[in-house]
Image (tube, rainbow, N blue to C red; front, top):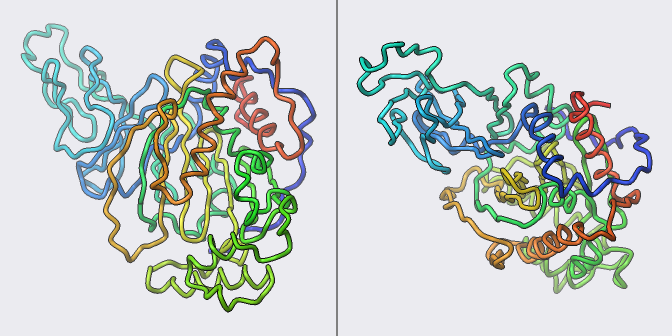
Length: 428
């Protein structure tokens, strides 16, 4: 395994065109997205760790579709459409569970874990017969990488690794397949799914939306890299922003939010910013053996900073040495002004027994409390913005997004999106 590449990506000529608001508010555009993009790309469906034993399953809800993802008796993972082939009833409610077979509660038809039709009640009452090939659950492409299960609704799609491009090379040094799930929630937000993706694709908003973080993060020094379909942002931490009066010093925020939390004696610490970053990274490395965490392939920047990746179309990864925030932005099945924000917090503690948390469902509109999550107050500040952005886009006065160079990942995202909608494969 090689370390994560740190070289900057080649600069792309993405132009200066404005992004029309219709992409965020129009049902017609949402319908185009479904037909030309969502039905053709690889989508993160869930965690391999939720399928530890044969018969364990979870559902993945995307648009109007529901997918059953199941651990099969031979140890493989399979995916099927979560719909009875008799009259279209959903076989399982959204969520997780374990089963020996799937039975429809409407008429009692039964399916094996592999989707094969096992029994149709009163089979003799179907003079046309019950052809198994036609009436078994329809297969969905399913592959795994990084401890995650991915599905693709296009049976002719290229392999997952081809789709991910540089992502495995960049992220395999973290060993996510050994990390433990600590938080699991879905927040219903009154905004388009792209409005949510955009909010986490740049650091330009940090000084206004998250001003308290400027004491220990460098929004100005953030770098942006665009690849074939996906993008990266390296957001420096354990360093104050040039916008903050404490820039160039070890601020109280650095001491309190970073050094003290990993056991550094801040009362006797006398070093500068570089020393603080080294002390923070070294303190975490010293914890590694007890936690079972492997930091051997991570450099100092990876020990200190937020390595932020967007996997097209709807996955945001905020990666640190000890935890990763996974955001999954799912479209509402019928309303382009609503979406579902899935949040997972994974901890780099392979040796610890972390009990799988219950799934929580909340509403940003009703003010869901995220304060119990480390850093949750920052996420709440983003959740406050999202419905207001979507509402503002409805105004006749607003026509399009006017993007600067710090928002290059948003521009790149739209270039990939439009490649799909114009019949391409996301490349350009």
